[in-house]
Image 1 (cartoon, rainbow, N blue to C red):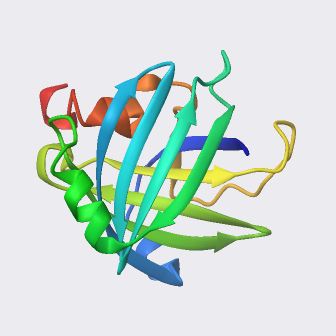
Image 2: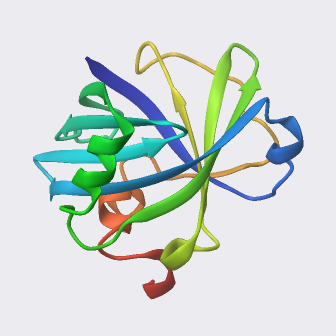
Length: 155
């Protein structure tokens, strides 16, 4: 239940040609406290309830718990969320032995594209594709919970 990931800005849209899957995501936060976040997500035809704990000081890992919930329940819970719903398309791109999840944001976060790669350990190495830009792991302004309150358009 520990999530270990690295996060990067994306400097080109070449990843779209390399993606093997993509889907739209709509998500909101019932709680966006830095100590714990509670997220509701609509992904394809299902809902997902996620609880995340506080990140380590380097931002590489944190507690994460997820549970699938019916789409109808997720839609109802989204109505209760804090202000600032996130809309994005997620692209899945296989690079070497890893899958990068690349999020292209819309609405108030239009123009922001962020890639994440999940790892099995903090020291694990991975291949970096050419379209990967600056690393922003641990920079809380790129957390979705912060993007919902202080969107990219306001930076």
